[in-house]
Amino acid sequence: MSEAQILQQRMVAGVRFNKVGKLYHFDYSEFPELQMGDFVIVETARGRQMGQVNGFAAADDRGMDYKPIMRMATPRDLLLKQQWEAKQDEALEKCEDKAAQLGGFENVKFVAAHYNYDGSLLTFLFTAEDKVNTNRLWNELGRMFPASQVEMRQIGPRDVAKLLGGFGACGELRCCSTFLTDFSPISIKMAKAQGISLNPSEITGMCGRLRCCLVYEYEQYVEARRHLPKRNKRIGTPHGEGKVLDVHPLQDAVTVVVEDVRYVVQREEIIPLDEWEALQKKAQEPCAKHGDGPCECGAKPGKQPKAEDEA
Image (cartoon, rainbow, N blue to C red):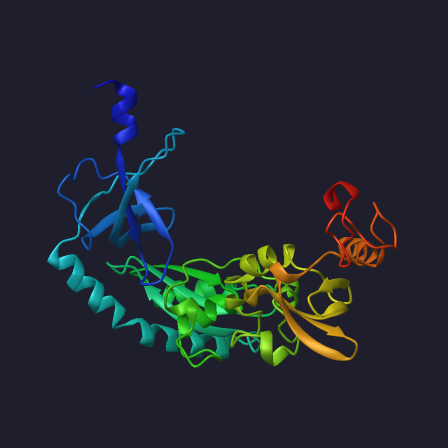
């Protein structure tokens, strides 16, 4: 087997650090027996972390450098992780109390405190409308938690909703806290393309931002609308010439008004106006071969027999 084939077949392990988080890939060549669901210890930009293997994928053939898995997690590591996670609520309360003592954090909401598996890193997550200087608080917390490296991280409203969980406006668990691992860019035009009311209560999620679900069917609506006429356009239909009042992309149809009567017309029944006018004009014209008189070609009633036929 050539070296190129070996590289092509090289696989990497997808590791997730949170239940609903991004997937990061690591080289597991030193652990060929690695399986789905195994916990591993890896080195990241934020220090040592414990993650769970969620799948395997072919390595990027563009020469991407993958960090290796340091080792398999041991039962002791898993027990340590549970013990430190049990201290997170207490750490968050101490952070909030210290922030209140120092002052200047009235517009800041501290959302969560996260220890890594061995307690060597403690991250406080907070949200605020503007950028916040946390140097004083960071110094005080460093003294309060000497066994851990303290990190302060500001997060956005969507990340807050993801952490808090709960139910969305649809009555189901929030997408961000159940299966969304990343947030896609969302704009008002996505709501417009789907015919959704621009009332804030209709398009805004619990986080105060545009709902993530607006992006789910957007491409399908755009594709469907490409083949349908726009509102107010005049078209030909089996009921006559009419004006488009509404577009129904998922039904592949439009609502048309013809002489004050509304009809729902499927796309395959729509006739472009220029073609419709040409057909109407042709239908009103006399026989091109015989004029308005009796037609002997059979195209019009009243066929007159030819002289040779009479003979």
